[in-house]
Each structure stands twice: as C-alpha cells, then as structure tokens.
Length: 131
Image 1: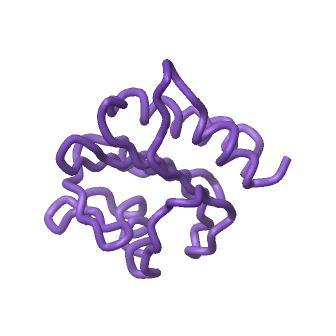
Image 2: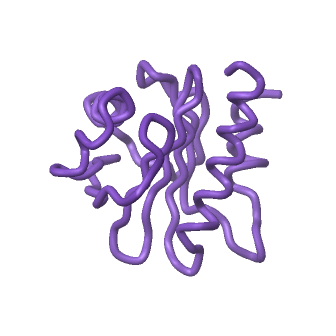
C-alpha cells in the first residue's frame, strides 16, 4: 500500500460525516512521505521542534507547536509518543512511530478525541508493522 493511500483512506476518512482538515505522514528527517492536498507548507525547523519535544517532552510547551507557521498551544499528550495542540476551535495531533510522524489537523465540528483516535490508531498500526 502506498503512503498516499494511508493518508487518503485512513487519515482523511469520513467518521460520522466528519473528517480531518489536513493530514500527513512525514519522516523523522522532515521528508514528506504523503500528505493531503491542503496540508500546510511547513518549515524544517518546525519538524525539528516536534522531534525535539519527543526526545525531551515539554520543550514545546513554553513556545507552542508550530506547523505551517500556525501556532498551537500544546495540551496533554503522551510523552515521547503523542503531542496534541489546540488553536481556537481546532487543533493538531502528532503521533510518533519508529520512522515517521503521523499528523492530523482538525476543525470543529470534529472533536479533539476523534482526531486523536484517527491519528493514533494509524500510528499504532504502523508501529506494529515496524515502521
């Protein structure tokens, strides 16, 4: 299965008539493996900041998580595994796998819990596959 299929069929899937605003699978080095058409153009240092927070949880909390120049307030996550961010009525979930970051961005009416479920379920599956 191609990485684009994971984004299109799993991350951008329809749940109760709702779906993520944007999604991507990005290598730890910042290389885009696959992304939705409207995923924001991010800067390499934004991915570096996310990777640093996975290595040393809490480093993004004071400054916020930036993705595509948009600042998200970092909220509860799972140290070393999941980072969650909030901005207004939307937010972002980032799940770290062995080789990649699975990223989902959402807006209302989707809830943070629905976004977390979509992103983390695919991330857990990829981890189980050794990816």
